[in-house]
Image 1 (cartoon, rainbow, N blue to C red):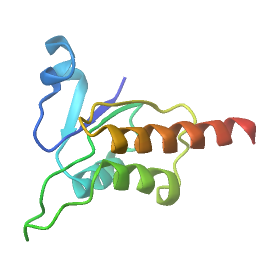
Image 2 (cartoon, rainbow, N blue to C red; image 1 turned 60 degrees about the vertical axis):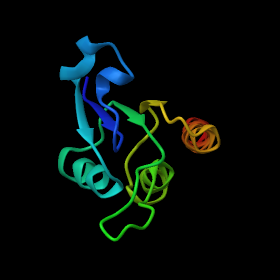
Image 3 (cartoon, rainbow, N blue to C red; image 1 turned 135 degrees about the vertical axis):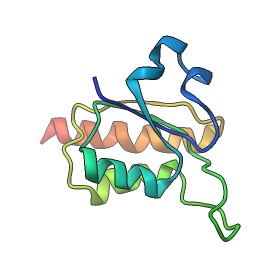
Image 4 (cartoon, rainbow, N blue to C red; image 1 turned 120 degrees about the horizontal axis):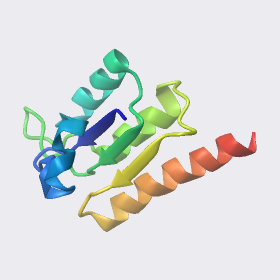
Length: 111
């Protein structure tokens, strides 16, 4: 199973059992997330952080919710079978990510 881990600071073993490390590809920013999926296709599983730090100019970087919105509204990918977890420490943003993906998958299944 192809898995993707989006987080600017954490490592896979900070969220999952260390035996899972080889199963994940890690991306550290919104841009790296989009580039990864454009190059490699949609993974079967994505683990989302929300707050992705600052960009090179010291401005708040696009976050995990922005990455989720890109998946749903711009990627054109079939997300109906995407498995995901939100490991963000930001409870409001975590719920936004879960809500958007869960509602979109529900919509796709009802089509």
